[in-house]
Image (tube, rainbow, N blue to C red; front, side, top):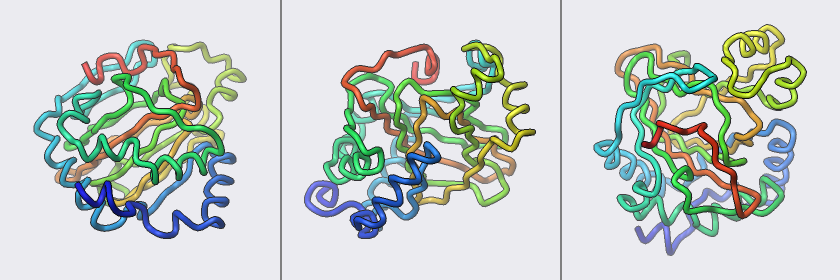
Length: 247
């Protein structure tokens, strides 16, 4: 645990002013920013061991979300129980170096919470496992990748930036089945796809960008991530968007 408390946790490139300016620009433009090779090797190794350890507490979920009718099929371990089982992840969530980076990228305040939604560990372990299309309650979601399938084998992040604006133009009503609207966005080349390797991370404006993790396509591949939620305000109105996921 000492490297998380007493040493730097991020690689040096994430402390350079020019790099931070570029990341801030990308996030403002795309509502998403890619953070490859974010942690030092020692810190990444510690965190990956935590993810391995926590898998035994994960529960398999397989259901369709209310309204949107998109699939959740994966193992999850979420809520404050994660921090109870993993002091390392608890330390990381409020770590000054990570918080400073996120503040620089978002160009504003970053607040954390004790709400159950703020942390989740997700495991996609079998062919067809997916985390279907959704928005999050918290504005910012920070995702760390610890295992990932090889390229072209699924497990990619697909997203539609500025979804709220597009949805209004298409006449989409909240909690309406979303499949036909996503396909319309595909035809208009509005769906972005991102591959992330182990050691990568990303930050997304998750309350405005519709997003999903595409289904795994091949046996003996897996994707395991840790997600932290943050806000630019002290209070967040919670909805039923994650109902059933961490219950």
